[in-house]
Every structure is written in C-alpha cells, then in structure tokens.
Length: 404
Ligand SMILES: Nc1ncnc2c1ncn2[C@@H]1O[C@H](COP(=O)(O)OP(=O)(O)O)[C@@H](O)[C@H]1O
Ligand SMILES: [Mg+2]
Image (cartoon, rainbow, N blue to C red; front, top):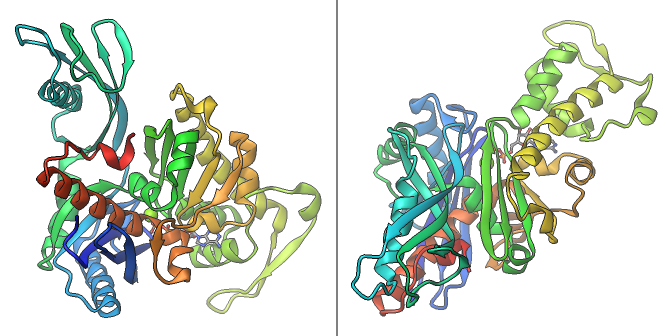
C-alpha cells in the first residue's frame, strides 16, 4: 500500500523546544521512528512564532540533527499548529438533495461536509482539520452512513478546527525558507492523540491533554471519534512565571525549582512552616522561600488551567460517558503528582502517555514531549495510506484518521 520505506517527517514548533521526528512507513503501514532532532526554542511564544529569524535558526538545528540521526534528507514535513488563534467547534452543514429520486450519494455527503466546514468561518481563517461526526437525513438523526437513503435534506455534523491563515502562513514560510515544504498543517492536539491513544481508548471515551510550555491542547474522543477539542494559550511557562513573581526569584530559578521540588498538589500538612534555600544570584545572599507558598502558587495555576478544560468539556454531550480516563503528554506530564490533580478535577483515571503501535528507541517512545512530532508522522502515514487506497478505488477519506 505504501511505497516501501516511505519517509515521513513531523515538525513541532513548540514554545519550549522545536522537535522533528523522522519516521518510516513499512509496506504494511507499520511505523518506525528513525530519528529525532531537537532544539531549545527561542522565537516562539504561547505556541506561535514571534521571531522568525530565531525560529528559523532553531528549526534548522533540529532538522539537521534529525537528518543526521535518521540518515535522510528532509524535503517535506507535516507541521504542527497550535495557539490562541485556533478555534475548535462543532458545525452543521446543510445540503438539499437535488436528484429526481432523492437518493443520497457520496457527492451529497461531501457537499454537506463542505458546507459545515465553511459555515461561520470568519474572514482570514481557514480549516486546519475537520472530522465528520454523523448525519441527519430530514428528521432522522444519528445516521452514520446516509448513502442510499432517500430524503430531501442532508445535514452533516462536523468537528471543525480552524486557524488564522496569516499565523499558519508565517509558520509555513519559515519552514519553506529552508527549502523544506509543508505537506499539511495539523492541529497539535490531534497529532498528539494519534501518537498516544489506542483505538480502544477512543472507543470507550478518553481525554488527551498535552501540557506544553506555552499552550495546552486537548482532544476528547468517544465512540471511536473526535467529539471535542481545544487549546488554551497557557502552559508550563505560566507556572514558572507565577512562581518567579510570587516568590521574587528569577524565571530560570523558578523553572529549575518547579522541576526539582515542584508538585501539582498543595499538601498543606507536608509543607506548613517549611522553607527551601535558593542560591542568591549575581552576588546576592541565598534566600529562604516558603515551600507552602511555592506549592500553593504552582498548584493554583495548574488547577486553573485544568478547570478551564473541564468547563469547556462540559459542552461535549458524551463527556460524562467516557470510561478510558485521561491521558497526559507534553513536558507538563512530568510534573510530580499531576495525576492526583487531574483525577481530582475530572474524577477519571489518569495515565501518562506512551506512544503506541510505533517502533523505535524505547526512550523516544516513552518521552511525553515527543508525542506531537511522532503523531505528525503517524498523521502523514495515514494520509498516504488513504491516498493509496483511493488510488486502488476503495472509498476512503481522512475520516479514517479520527473517525470510525
Ligand atoms: N519535571 C517537570 N516538572 C514540571 N514541568 C516540567 C517538567 N519537565 C518539563 N516540564 C515543563 O514542560 C514544558 C515543556 O513541555 P513541551 O511539551 O516540550 O512544551 P512545548 O511543546 O510547548 O515546547 C515546560 O514548561 C517545562 O517547564
Ligand atoms: Mg507541544
């Protein structure tokens, strides 16, 4: 189905790091990660490029490392997109059945889905991804496959992820400036979900949360399909900032302390009256910071972020039915006791992500920060598979990525 040894590359331009994953799709669609390239990111804020020159330098470094590790020349990437400009919403597309016998065809389905994508699309925005949910034929709801049914009006329900065209174009041009083309922009939340969620989890109902440095993406699946997604322009950087401001320490110190002694849960009994000595900077004396304040500040910001996600998910009708819990990825998944906090807010089992159904170095597959880049590789592989199927005359759409 694939050309043997097809190389697919995912690029995440993150706030904390640029990450390139190079994968190889075997003849039966099996994926192997051949190499990873990384570089600390300097030109990105809240998931969006704010300094094209610095971003380009860092992307070049990450691409070069990935090329060397995988021993390939990278010509094309699947590009992860995130940021506050992204909107994720359910949309309905209405299409009248015009044929004389009123039998619904695949073209009618495509037209209804196309109308849903365009509905309410503000000027200057474009569709990044869209996932069909189900159809309504006249007054009959919940139809999975309306082909052959007879009706007057076909309505498609589609989860549509849109972004500001200018922001996507900025990222695309920075990548193209190094003679690398963009195969497709993909929402980071979907990419991470592809890397770490199993089909069984998606069937039972599962929430993925990718806790990054400048943005937090989430995607909820139920009944095997994407039901809800979103992004908050808040992440680990905000936790470090709050700690720095609240305790009057430097951002670097706050970041380091967060990783070393931080916890997502405020345990008053354990830290009451306790202090921690932080070395003085630029010739100043060491200082004692209150562990009670430290934990309280850190847990409050994380709790607030998760509460916002929880409130947004209340809009998803099927969220209450989810049985497979919450899966965490992104660097924030390393936060001590984060599972306890997530459990408290969502009342669901919580696990840290592990890439599934991909082979490669164990440390790469277990790394929560690589989920998006590896998911982008999987997205590319599935897209190629879909195209190959279409070439062979089997009706298939990108729906197979996220849908039934
Ligand atoms: N052990 C840890 N405890 C708490 N936060 C951590 C830990 N390790 C990494 N992080 C946080 O994870 C974030 C980086 O995650 P990452 O997924 O790489 O971000 P991005 O995709 O936005 O570049 C940073 O904010 C960092 O502080
Ligand atoms: Mg990320």
